[in-house]
Amino acid sequence: MRFQNLFEIEHERMDYKRIILLAAIWAALLQQLPAPQAIGAERDLPPFHAVDARLRDYIEEALQRNPAVMEVRARYQASLERAPQVEGLPDPVLSFSQAIRSVETRVGPQRNILQFSQKLPWFGKLDLKTKVALQEAEARYQLYVAQQRTVIADVKRAFYDLSFVDEALYITGEERAVLEHYEALASSRYASGQGLQQAVLKIQTEITKITSRLDTLHQQRTSLEARLNTLRDRPAHDPISAFGDLDLPQTEIVLEELYSLGQENRQELKAVKSLMEKNERAIDLSKKSASPDVTLGATFINVGRRDDPAGIEMPPPDNGKNAFSLSISVTLPLWGDKYDAEVREATEDLSAERYRYVRIQNDMELQIRDLAVRLETLQRQMALFNDALIPQAEETLRSTEAAYETGQVGVLDLLDSERFLLELRLANARFRSDYLAALAALERAVGAEFPQS
Image (cartoon, rainbow, N blue to C red; front, side):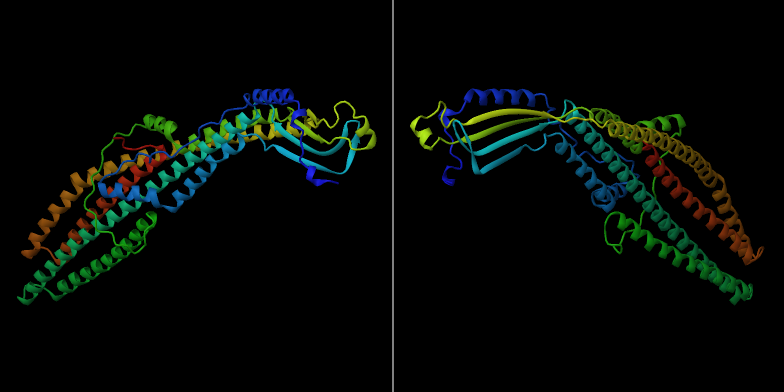
């Protein structure tokens, strides 16, 4: 066999009219396919409330570096690449057959065959697959924003706890300085014979307790530093300077407005909505599974000239003319049970997402209600401490100090007054931190900036 004739084609004998007709049919069918759709792009960081510039810097750094945020972001961006994969046609098939022993025909031997085929899914299938992929990507984006919101709340909580510890260190340091003053005063009275050594010892014991409390606070600060650094993907031992007093934003708590804000913005609800739309499209796609797919094909047969004595002596008409044919085939979806099962599966998935939506909505409203009550309670407690309890305790301490200096009361009364004021100041500092943390948790619950600018 002469393999040098493997790809010989007699162009002058090809039927170009058939090729033009095939191209026209092909173009018409491709126009019926869905056009590529633009899918998601990177979006801005979610808005959030920050009580000062340092907190805002920490949050923005965490959103750019936190590994949990980066993980969910990568999964979201991976989902964006799904739509381009499903919106395109299946790969065409090109096949070549070389005859080992040529098939002799009236017009010459068939040397080789070149075949091309393209599968065309039924109308609407590719469009539905693309919509399913896009809804999945949108759901992943909402989960990405939800993770950002979680990290924002975590950074705020660590920041506020660290702020409380710094304030507690300051208050407790002041307390130790006052006790050291009392110790000097008691020692002076004891040296002059006006006081007892027992008073000096009791004050020294109280100073030891305060020193132990300071050690505990320093240990807590180290842990909170590590927590805040970890959220920002920084080394745990990086130092963080002390915070000053934080302003407390005052906001009116209206439950119905908060419920509406959460219904509109909560990312988990948005994600489930996207998944519900995805499952609705999946149901439509499942119903189309029973529709036949079409495969179009074209075949070219390379035919050689007859070189036998009869063919040479009396060549037949169309001697060595190449053959060209078109074909169409369809799938036969005969097994209806599996397609019915596919529709039922997609329907149950949709039902599950609807129940999930209700569950998340109920949990959100429960969180909002609990946090609203907590904020209102903390507001009342801080007002009570600032307007009544702390001023009264300070006045009581001043009176007790004056009475102690004149010998009217003992050292235990003085220490009790001082200790009571210390506990009130620390409790009020804790209330301030808890109030800010509750605002951060409420911002996470509604999925939007709160208090709003």
